[in-house]
Length: 98
Image 1 (cartoon, rainbow, N blue to C red):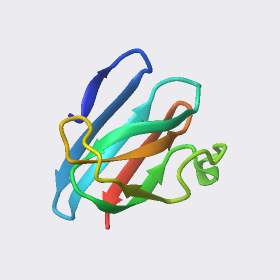
Image 2 (spheres, helix red, strand yellow):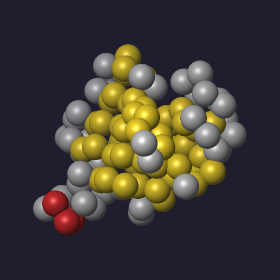
Image 3 (cartoon, one colour):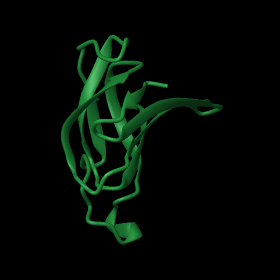
């Protein structure tokens, strides 16, 4: 888990480790867009948005991060890096470090 305790905003974030590397998953369980939602990240640098369930390709409204996110060296959720994300309504993001 990155954060499974944000019941006030109904957001869950976690990491998955697989053969091709680490993925960060962030779920917004409300119909509200979450602007500048900070999430702790395992490494610095650029993250590619592998999946945005609100993409127009899936019939969504294209709310997201433009395909990329840059991690800052600002501690958050017990990690040394973090990023401010735009979370789509009732949506899921999957990020992969580049």
